[in-house]
Image (cartoon, rainbow, N blue to C red; front, side):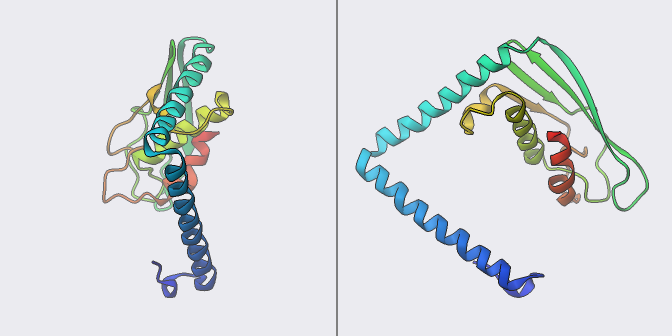
Length: 178
């Protein structure tokens, strides 16, 4: 499950892994009980209904926003290796009941660890949207039906492997969420 010997704080890491593993075991047991009590078809339908509910709610909230293209930039002073500044450029397009987060104008990926994989860019964009307008909606796949995330591979918002990316999660994701 986890090798605690290669961690800075092996005891704390091991206890954390045990707690996560234990919570997953409890969650699995309870989820299987719900399926046994209600039936797989009902549980599956509830999942789809929740996604439809989220999509409908988010579309209503997006429709309340003025259509248009909105621009934003965020700068990193350096990438931890060079003194070169790197820019994240966003064009946020609101069109009816859909939103596009377009990062294609962002700088090429850095040598240092400030790059983000696509999934981090997507997650940070959806989180920002939820903070701004969707705080009361359940978080599920229904969010993805109304939002598109556009970027280019090889940029700091979509690192091309084997480029480094840890700072993309710890540095650039929070800055994107504002």
